[in-house]
Image (cartoon, rainbow, N blue to C red):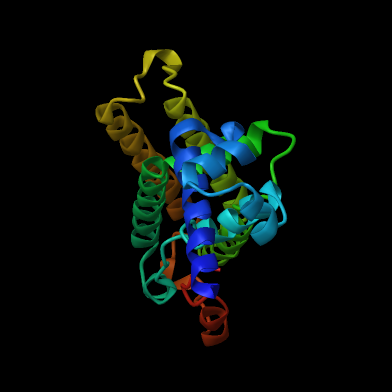
Length: 225
């Protein structure tokens, strides 16, 4: 009996994910989810307390897949200023490549931006973790505007990703074309390299760069929050 319940719960959670990916978050309804999972809707109330409980269970399940890739802080600790900026550019580009491939995460993001009834922000824990990493890197290279820089870049990429999902073409740029994203990624690298050039002037003597202590490294061990 317990195994049957666990299997039914899993089917319902998977049905929510499929519907979000194929139809969007705003199309979710208790009757439609039950039909998609092939179960009686009464079980949604019995096992989850209702649709909101099922959505909460799905979001908790999805949270495991929204964590960021690990950042090798020890490698940055021993890197030059140029290597730090190149590493950050690679990481940033890779993160948003992953995000563009995740239709469900995009739908949830759109819902978070546009829906009044959207549940607690499933991206909050991820952003908190990344914010702590960004602050440590900013302190490492003596860049007091690191969080503002990351916020600006993040917001720009989120906007472009939502535009892509809606098949918009800002300034005529076709975001459904991989070549367009190749150009955007090239611009991102130019921005990071320009920031490196600016910081190099601010830190002409790279030997004065502070280093992370062992306690700093242990507080950010590279594991997603």
